[in-house]
Image 1 (cartoon, one colour):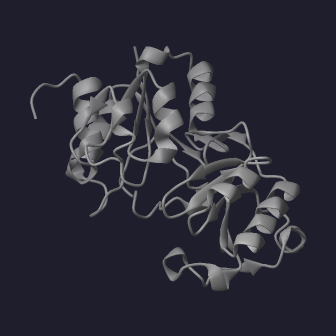
Image 2 (image 1 turned 45 degrees about the horizontal axis):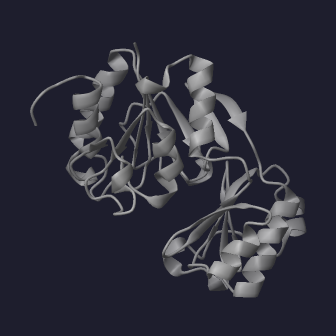
Length: 258
């Protein structure tokens, strides 16, 4: 029976130095044998580093914390945040004085560029408010919003009244409630009629928790976040050493050694 494999990008598939050759080779062989490999990322499609992933064979993309699903070039699911949700995130950003990245399927926009750390990118187009965004970029479908600095517990609680929130030590992600990396996995598992014991998720970070819990087999990179490691059915070697490749070899290709 075929396996359905979901891979986080940052710190899992893509590590320092790019995607390891061992990982690329294992993915190629898995797909050649009929297995299905999707990236499952918190990034919106417009923020996926496709150039860095060049040469990686993939069946499809799950992006924006479950808000966008594409398989073999066909869009199977797409959800855009409502203008009211975006406006609420902007209101909280005003109160806590943090810049935002509006992550769309097609492109990224800034809100309060002067408050966005240079590492996040200050030079992309900026909008004044949700109405301004709707008028200037009417076709833009925002998958999620990133706060570019950490949030206080009070700000997280306030956002959570209207939005899904994942708070990280250095930033936070907000999105429409009811969506996650896990909901996208459920969608594809049901559509493709694959038993959950043949669903594998691989990640390293706090925004991978739901994805790992939803999988029949959870794989965490050996250099993953300490709070995520206990969720693993299999702990691989570090991502930059080919952790994804090692896991596919052992769990899917059933190779021994290494």
